[in-house]
Image (cartoon, rainbow, N blue to C red; front, side, top):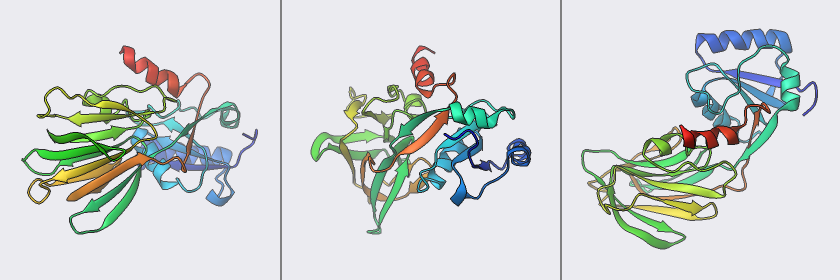
Length: 255
């Protein structure tokens, strides 16, 4: 990273983030996206995820600074010495998940997920879902509230809250975790190689409606979902040397 990178600032719409962005732009300037070397995002983790999705095609690295309630993907907010921090920052490359959804209306929708792809029942009736891994049926009928497939970066989020495993960053693996499973009673999920393709088929979809969500992008009334790691797409996050994402994920296992 250059000692004087061209910075493009973005911020969440909460007043503290907008005020901080205005001060940072006055101090360091605001470069158009096409001329930027780096994106600096001011907000919380939710805004960081939206920023990564919004600029996924730019291939620009993103350095986040926390101005919000949750900042797992963010660095500390400091106004001073930003170019020096960016020059010393360490990159972390992430491959997002991709889902391809077939809905009842016979339409196909694709979306990326940085944290997880989740399937959830839409009604009071439990979902009935068949799970295939690389074309082989692994769970004939999962009766549940839902199921999710998580990346290592997302394993400490929704996945952890439904008792899924924490995956160290850099692990070539994905977490497949049921949400409130009823049958099979003893199946608690699986850790899968990152190269697999997982297919979810909704049984009785005409009366047991299910939605599919890739981070914040939701598709309702789905019939099937194919999910896999998109290795042709890489997101680059930047972190201060003393604020390692790998270390934070590791430490979550001891809390």
